[in-house]
Length: 128
Image (cartoon, rainbow, N blue to C red; front, side, top):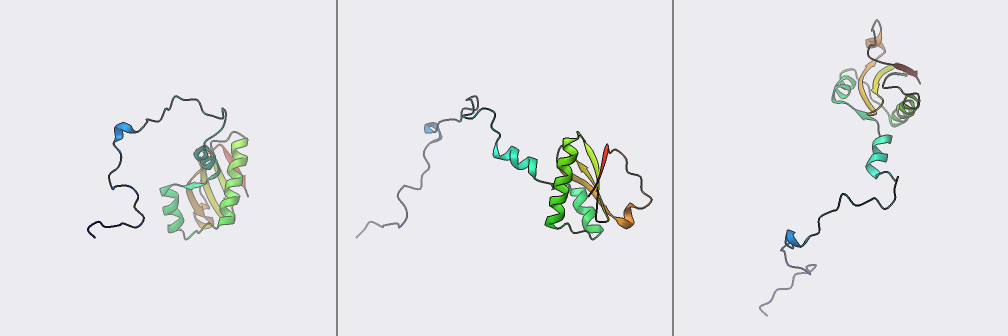
């Protein structure tokens, strides 16, 4: 028997030519007008840490637990509802500067680091 049988292969290893594929029509109206994409919903509900904030957290030995991240998310939601742009979030002897629009923690400090400090370029403060 000269022919080989490949289990699980129904098609040749060659991809169909690109010319046969239909381009995506980005101008086509969305099937559900007013609906938001999954990425938009995800971006609204996720708290991010900037590289600077991650570095500060590591340097100061701060570990944020999932329940703390939920509290931060709730604080960001409250700040956003009031129209805040950059907020100071005080939580459990931790101070966080948060960019509300991007839902990003910009920097973080522990209790010892925040003493005798002046927080600038914020428009709101949230104590949680």
